[in-house]
Image 1: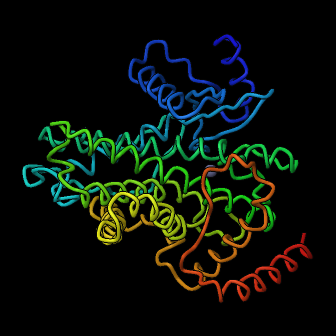
Image 2: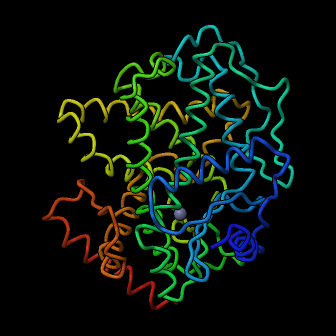
Image 3: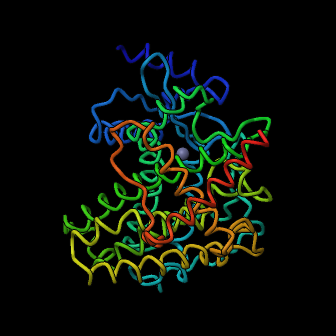
Length: 382
Ligand SMILES: [Zn+2]
């Protein structure tokens, strides 16, 4: 199909969410778009058209129209990730074991770290932030490219794991990542959505870590100091994912766990770690797995801390998921059972099976019983 036709379709599909951005004069965005299109083409033979939209209510979306798939990312999301990548890398107290951090000197705090994604996408920068050393600039580049990959692979996960087709055949309004405008999300729909989100996260967890390991394996000079060993790879990888979710999570402050489309950060983090256990073990056995677990925890806590370090006020991370509480564990078990319940309806293409090694076989029936009770209660309400 001609590119022009695809562009027209794209604008039609996303017209409610901000049109395609025409960026003839914007080299940065043009380059960005081309890189993303190449990345997607490398990963799948599916007919997927990627482009950039201009909308403050949406981070990224995946959908299907007239038999073709579409992925969109918003300009605001790109700018915000790019900003935080620079801001964190320029601060000597953030990720301080990556490169010569003590030569960095940007410790200016944001007065208010609530993330602004309005039409002009401005985060106050005074002066514009940039790391001083070349190693830390490489770090900023890596943080940025990984955070974008995170989003794109998550959207791709929705497509290749069959979610878009599943939602379409279930007659569920399926424009991904968009909280329904009326905010009247039924609990069942919320559970459906969160289950698919976890599944898409798992896909993106595996593929982003593979990308990071490929950079590590390349032994390219540029990355040697930033990624000298496996621990640094795992830590930076988990740092970036946590950073992304914290930024996204702002939309859900103050809502209940069954009123939202995306699971709280604590659960996304938990299942992401689980998703990669096989990959890491396959590469280096249980000793590498130990490195992974330790580095993972460090990366997550350093990302949460990074937001505190750059803010006057503790507005990030938000209140929704401070700790992985029992309440969140219970919710995680619900998602796990729900995935089991709908898996038959997902395409056999699905490249990943959600599983939770924290749930022992002898616990499973008990958990399933609880799940069925919750579901019948929810069904009564809808
Ligand atoms: Zn999603």
